[in-house]
Image 1 (cartoon, rainbow, N blue to C red):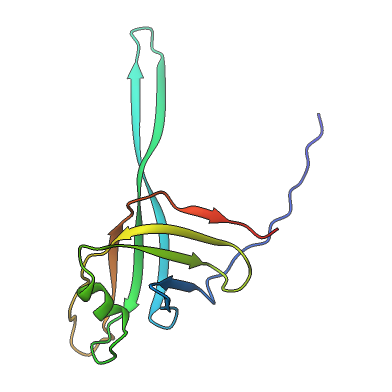
Image 2: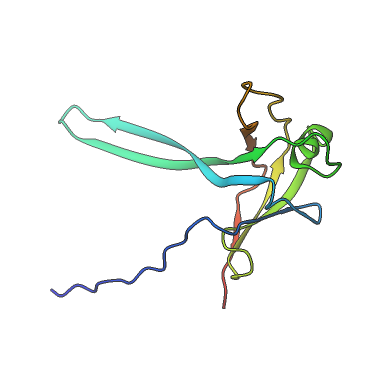
Amino acid sequence: MSTTVLEIEPIFGKNYAVICAALDYRKHIDSFALVPQTQTQTWRGAGNNTHSDVSVIGWNVQAGYMQDWKSEDSFSRFLQEHAGETLTFTFEPQAGEGTSWTVDVVIVPGQVGGAIGSPLNVTVTLACATDPVPTYPA
């Protein structure tokens, strides 16, 4: 039996686009990830046998960003002002390259403040109301 060595085109996080409500927050965000929430169930039989099943039970967005309370359209203020709303995000891991994911996200406010003498960059976890839908280039 022969095997085929598959090539890869790795992606490096350099030029994200994170778009919501016609605003691109790429200059506010330093990380953005769509993270599946999984659940594993295992059944063990008396004959020393096991059977497992894994289900994706939902998704979260984990977004790292720099706090900015002065700019009217900052991501920090966006999270505060839209808390409780469900809004559509589009994420492009390489802006303009053609691959993107669209997902409805439940907005929660992010952290305010942090350690003295440090940049006030923080992470927020947002629940997804829908599964992410990918769009791939032709």
